[in-house]
Amino acid sequence: MVHHRLTVLPLVLRRVRLERAVDVTPRMRRITLGGEELGEFTRDGLTLPAFACPGFDDHIKLIFASDGNVRDVLPAQLEHGIDWPPSRTRVTRDYTPRRHDRRALELDLDVVMHGDGPASAWARDAKPGAELWIVGPKSSVVVPEDTDWVLLAGDETALPAISRFLEDRPLDVPVRAVVTIADDAARQPLPTREGDVLDWIVAPAGDENALADAVRAVEPLPGTPYVWAGAESRALLPVRRHVSKERGVPKSHVNITGYWHRDEGHDPARAGANEAVVSPVSWFAVRAAVCLGIPSALAEGELSVADLALRAGVDPAALEPLLAMVTAPGVVVRDQDTVRLGPLGQELAVDEHARERFEGLHAEQVIALADLAPALAKGTAAWSRGAGTTLRQSVVDDPERYAELAEDAGGLVHLVTGVPALAVWNRGGRVAITGPGALVVADVLAEGTGSCPAVVEDPGPLRVLRDEAGAASPFEFTETWGERDVAVTALAIGHRTDAEAETLLRVLRAAAPVAVLIEKLRPDGLSPAAAEEALLHLATLGTPPRAPADLGRIAARAGWRISARRPLGWGVECFELAAIS
Image (cartoon, rainbow, N blue to C red; front, side):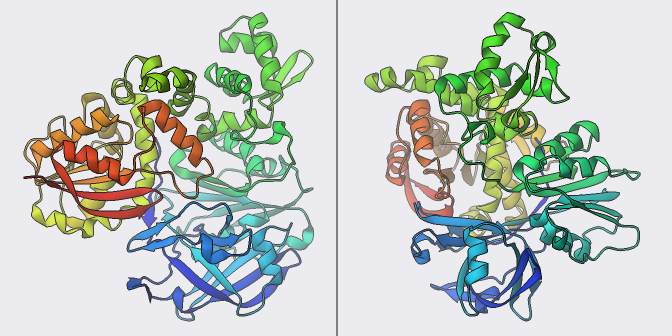
């Protein structure tokens, strides 16, 4: 599990206006936004901080509505963050700030003028004074200090971030930059220094190999590089593979982000991992290919069917029906007797998040749906029928499953910035935390309150958290609660059944007079898969997603009452519990 060092920023919804617009090139327009809400301001009784974007590749969300009613789709501003309600008409686009003038309260965004997307249409049509709503940035990535040289790569959409790096120079090291453009008119002056090398590559639009070829051509400098790339998602797949496999750059020094997706119509062979596989037979076929390591085996180049079967450890005759099935969604391409990766296969070979759709805990939850009907009829969890045990016990027994939950919990860092301000910590410094998000919350409390919380878990999960924290961690790692002033859960309830959640809360009740639960009860309002998440919750735990009232009933059975409740954003809430006397 690799973590980039982040500077977490306050998430604020801001209303800005268009001050002016100028064409930087025939293909890129710079819009200058201004307004009082780029400074510190007050809304609905909340004093909100001034805009900040310290990182060269920070991004903000521009908010639009497909029906034009933008105010109906805005997130709710919280004291420490925002919360996105569900919406069918909300449309957002991410952009990197090109320039921020704190004194003038101005913000520049560079918009590539291609297509009829909501942002380019707004940049084209808006007049000075036009209103725009933005959110973010939520965090800035910190470039590792042990970097000896930097490689920046991207297409036109990456130019704002590349320009920011060259201007701000987070590190005073040599830079090699490559930029692909479809037209020579897209060139623009960039602030390079002596010792930097900048290459412009003119390539036809849609050339998915041009950027990777340009990156391969960069002569490496001595020492450890930091590689940053931003471009169309598929153009980055061979870049990822080259950087990790051929150059061997540590993951901690790689930041590659798909900025946009080329519209290829409805060709399933060019869709991503979420869209390409619609038939259950196709899904299981792709899962088998991933589990057998077929995308990884083909990552270095085409193979004969016999050689691929040898790599996968299966009989060549048995492999043929599988290859036939995974050709349509684009995992592989058959060329007579040889096999090579298709677009989806390239994605699966280099993107672990794409593979998670077909292997790991999420895929196991999908498989549990096969037992959903009989489980519903008997009022049990489909997961338990297939696995013979609960989801909680499964992740306790399998460290890899728990590690997936811990990795997913990393997003809490953007939501819990206000938790140290709770008055509950004044009760004393003996704080203990459990759950996959324990380390995130422990870090925030240590920095914000000066306490040094203990991390409590069962043996297997505890080893995962201890290994993730590292030998230098100041936290105590223990299997027992002992006597505490405050007991905390950090996403510990979501993978437990109601009975298991009640048992945990009884343990907390015996350990401390008050408790703080930081738990996700509903899907993120920005998620397009909310219904899917709800069904998987039903299949794995045997109940629909819990409402706050459901959590209150579980807590009451364990001897608690909810004394305070605060939304933190993205469906996560903070509950303070007081013991029932």
